Amino acid sequence: MPYRSPVTDYTFLLNHVVGYDRVCATEVFAEAGADIVEAILTEAGRMCDEVMAPLQRGGDLNPARLENGVLRTSPGFADGWKAISEGGWIGMSGNPEHGGMGLPMTVTTAVNEMMSGACLSLQLAPLMSQGQIEALEHHASDAIKELYLPKLISGEWSGTMNLTEPQAGSDVGALSSKAEPNGDGTYAVTGQKIFISWGDNDFCDNVCHLVLARLPDGVPGTKGISLFLVPRNLPDENGNAGVANSLKVVSLEHKMGLHGSPTCVMQYDGATGWLVGEEHGGMAAMFTMMNNARLGVGGQGVGVAEAAWQHALAYALERKQGKSASGTIVDHADVRRMLMSMKADVFAARAILMACAVAIDMGNATGSAEWKARAAFLTPIAKAFGTDTGISVSETGVQVHGGMGFIEETGAAQFYRDVRVTAIYEGTNGIQAMDLVARKMMDGGEAASRLLDEIEAHAEGARAQLPELAGPVWEASETLREATEWLVGQGDMTERFAGAVPYLRAFARVLGAHYHLAAALADKGGAREKLARFYINALLPEHDSLLVQARNGAGDLYALDLDELAA
Image (tube, rainbow, N blue to C red; front, top):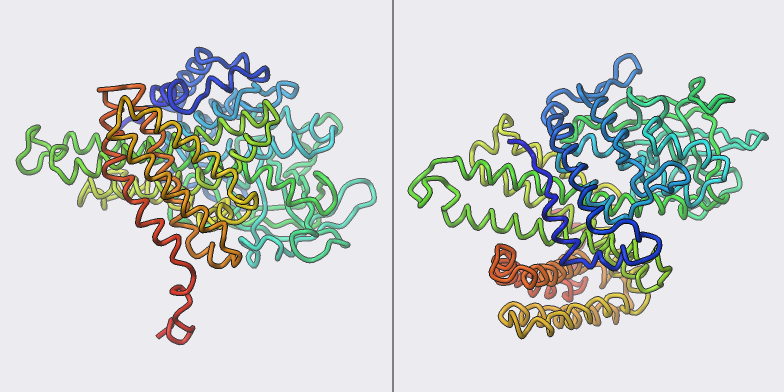
């Protein structure tokens, strides 16, 4: 089934739900008005549908491979990268000074999600470059910016991030990679990194790695880590990719999915690198890239959910089984339940994603501490709920297909296999939830409270028009507020962490209801109001049981000692 980019959904969200008008009302983004953005999304959607989507299945069946140390990408991926780079889609939010479009992150997020739905394996490559571009813009020297940014933005070169080591996953501070000064302003970087997405390719002149390593005087833990830019090929005197650096791809990981995306084990043997940011300030610089990636990964989940939903709907409309009004399974009650749940959750997750992007843009454009706090608060929710939705919707898509969903030829299973990792990389969803209830509540819950105030005020305003929908949203927000106050009152972080995952999901449920209510008000009597009714009546009530879990504390989790746990 051909993929269709959800351009109309995005224009509706921007115009009626997430308040994009505030972004283009700022001086920074004044030129990115609604008409311009719609034209951009339409053009990006055409590229996704016509160029990227046809590569989806082939990337799975003909994976990237390593031949005698040379990386060979899946057939057609080079042409896909060319279309992405020539269209300017890598540097959408990049600084125009270096060739970027200077567009709001909201627009970049929408385009990235559509690319993810078309072909997630390929979309990972520009996403990695975008993160590196942002990190270099914020932390690199002027000389590095002038040389690397134009080439990364144009797609002539590509970028990666190198954090994980065999013994250092989420605990990045346990890394053993080291960097020795060469005495000429460069450093010799040595170590091994694993799980490096798009660690190499055969369609760019150079691949630029951001590598975390420790200087000789770096203290143990994260405070002693520095960040280095280590290119595959050393730039020559003209700034072109020159001789090979002392690094290589050791092997490719054999993965559950994303077969078209080469995930590399990288070896650095005294490779020449340049310091990015301050000495021992690597984590601050890398977090710039990671936060960009977390929003992007949330979009990957939503994009795959959209594609899986489209695939399942097409099958349900054609599959004849049993008796129904249409003669197909689409009218069987349980199939309709699955399809409605998929569609409603995709909308909710997409709205949360876009609201987070709007907050990022408003924080950047205005410098407002409140907008920046909202962006920080929404980021773990957008990442975790977006990817959880990708997993649940793609899994449900398999179920809609029935036995045929378990057969690889239908393509339904690929969505699940491809998206499953999104809940793991860029910080597992459990870590996102712990971040939400810990670091993001160091303000005593103020950012959460302001968001809940807004939800309740909106629901109050909607009571006159849609009281049967506004009431449950207001009540759910109050229940969530009480749970938030309880969490903030827990001094023992283990108590907070024990309920972090259900709390994050409950918050996402309420946010989803809030945005569905806004959509219903903008489309009274229409399809969006009908979908909002389903979400608020059937899915929102889940928040109650989730918040019971969130407030249950850690006692029951640790009730069994280790011997009892293993018995």
